Image (cartoon, rainbow, N blue to C red; front, side):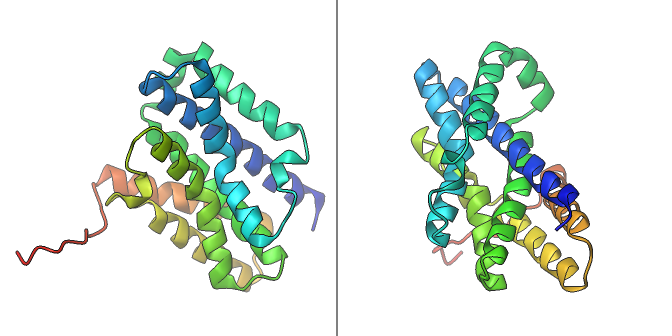
Length: 209
């Protein structure tokens, strides 16, 4: 794989890590947690999905503990959010923006890591989904919120659709750098479109009405 592509996926990984750290810290701030609580929620949001993915894939030790990079990226995201909270809130508009960027990036990373280990395409899609949503599930559970993935919102569906787009492009020999970029943009685009036009998944009901 050309070095440019390796640098791009690493850049995606760093971007996803920092925006999920920001997302977690903002949630902690909304819940009025103390500084330790904010740091903890920021960390588990950023590393939760990747940790679960690596454990399921048997990719041990998990990636984030093999380098200082992720520790400092997460810490930077947490501190930036705490110090410049008002600015971050204005720039993000809603917590949704950071989640959207994060799930797009981590879906690609999880999918590619699984495929690189020879995992079949359907399971690789699940690994991409796990990378994208597990950190948010942990964040929301710890802060006493219903995780976004369980809402009617288009969330997991966006990740799965993006992963399928990646597999299709890859199958037809599209350069990996394009596959990665188009996949991330597809997931972000679906989320923006769904929120803009209030498109939701049908809910499950036991009511006969």
